[in-house]
Length: 194
Image (cartoon, rainbow, N blue to C red; front, side, top):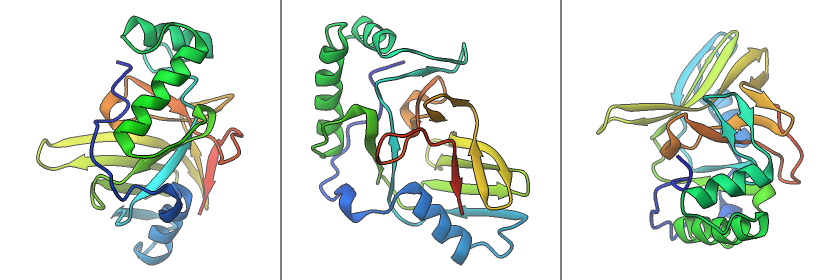
């Protein structure tokens, strides 16, 4: 359940500095593409984007538990990634992610995960009291929720959440596990504002 954070894909143009954050991408969708964004919106996100998350702390959806960094490193070792230490995990995971996404990032506590594998594969659905971001692959009929939660006006609060922020579920883990969403400075992110 662990190592497949994302399928290795060639992202020659995945330069994080040139694509918007998820927060900016959903603001653009709500502003431009939703006829009545206050009550309902169901639109594709037609731009690449990134989500910042803390890859040092895995969330186990089966037990609703945010693992410690040491527990995450031990789980990774059991699945063939790293040597079981936090430093060994960090080195192995950064190498894996940087190879998979063509980026050269150095901090797993504020990793900017690119979503650049198809500008129409992600759908934002907002209702008056709830929201979700889904990966949609019509070839395989997949419909995987990456982020979701409650909505109060222009505030989208993530659920589940932890002391490190709302939980992002990578597509390749299909909801089994995820990582806390953080700001670009590594602070917990519990909500997005439209």
